[in-house]
Length: 231
Image 1 (tube, helix red, strand yellow):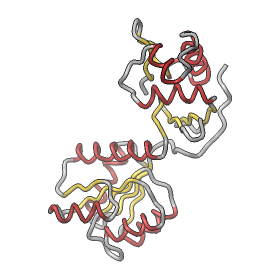
Image 2 (tube, rainbow, N blue to C red; image 1 turned 135 degrees about the vertical axis):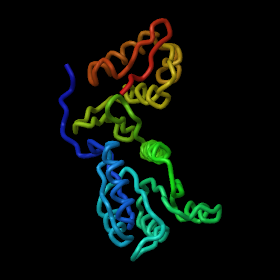
Image 3 (cartoon, helix red, strand yellow; image 1 turned 90 degrees about the vertical axis):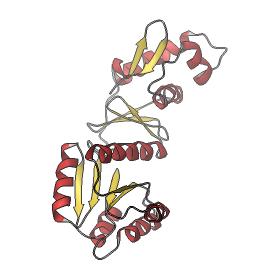
Image 4 (cartoon, helix red, strand yellow; image 1 turned 120 degrees about the horizontal axis):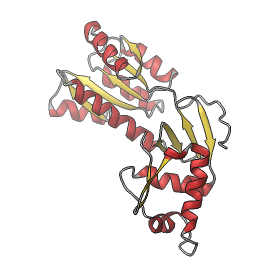
């Protein structure tokens, strides 16, 4: 029987994105594109509004134009960083010299993309930013949710949480940290458990995790071992 899921509010059902762009036409196009991609988009028309939203709400990623009314884009990034906001920031601007990119990265942005841009590249860069942010926060993708290593909890997109034991968390973290790797039982026994323990300890804890999280969470690769399940 699976453990009872208790409601949580973090992470959200869909990634939340703050878009700070004063060009109304481009802002509308981007908001529609990002919404279609599955983001919950908040749009700010100037740097002051962007600062207010960035400080008062939690976001998975932030996209900022440079030439903004009220507060210039890089100044906005500096103020957010100065107030402890660590969310990944992509600067989207027509200013694309090497000096401009260096200035943007030094201001605290993680990525810098110049206009005009390819939408597929923009979306790929945003996915990469979100992955890096989750990794820094100790969150690893597991099935349709996340493993929070610090709290030893698996949080799903529907708003539920399942607590894990130390060993269950260590096993799941090892698998989730390398999603494309198949681990043999001996690999997992040496990485997670005491090498002197029976090889069956790995199968036992795989069973425990499947009982709590569902069988697809860990995939059996016959003749080789185990791999984290696909989302």
